[in-house]
Image (cartoon, rainbow, N blue to C red; front, side, top):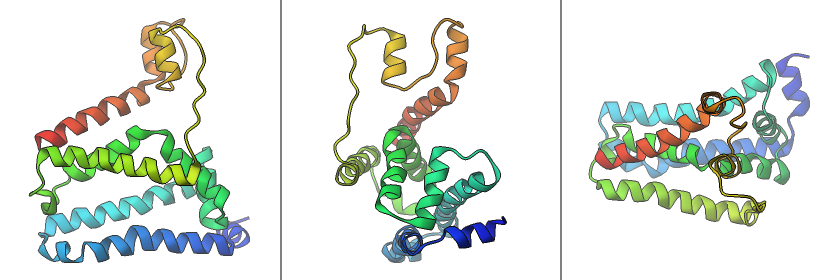
Length: 206
């Protein structure tokens, strides 16, 4: 079955409604809100603004690509289901993936504040950093009403580095293969965490 036939078979009213809502909220409304600021932007800032919006949409399309052409992750599967079927459950599952990793949110916000948009020139360094954490707080409040209060699986165990990183930071593996092997297994997680704090520092310096 081709992609077109698959989409035609899977698409439902709920998916059309959510897709319309997503396009309106991520493409149309931001440009309406930014209308006056866009008129004041230079060409480079306008380029980066629209590039950011396009990349935002490409991120979703990448999940569709993985769904059809690669080994889709659970996130890819529920992204596809949400945009084709809609539904409260699919929306909750989709949102839960964003709520699980705060560092991705920090990276995204920090990169936006580091992009040369002249509308952020008059914002102080301290305020930029506070904006990152304010947005995280608002997102936490939003997810509370969609997903409910976070549930923590607390187990009694000794406080050791391996227990901390595996339980709290969600690292994988152990020290049996050596510390270098442990770091290699979790290298992408480590890079993400270090990059998040580094970008916050760069935002403050900018």
